[in-house]
Length: 103
Image (tube, rainbow, N blue to C red; front, side, top):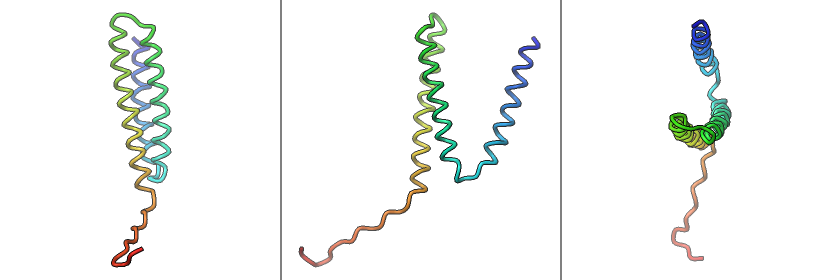
C-alpha cells in the first residue's frame, strides 16, 4: 500500500514540476520543445509496438490502444510543430505581374 502512495505522490509532484517548467519557457523555445516531445512520443510508440508484439490476451488490446493513441499524439505533434515553424518563416514577396507588356 505504501508503494502505491509513493507512486501517486511522485506522479502528482511530476505534474506540478512539469507545469512550472513549461510555463517558464519563452515563446521562441516552444518549437524545439515540441520537437523534443515528438521524439519522446516516438520512443513511446516503439515501446508499445514491441510490448504488444510479445503480449497475449487482454494486454494485446491495451497495446493496440496504446499504439493508436501514441500514433495520433505523434502525428499531431508534428502537425503542430509544422504550423509553428510556418509562423516564424518569413513572408514571401508578391510576384510581379506583367501588365500590358508582351514578352
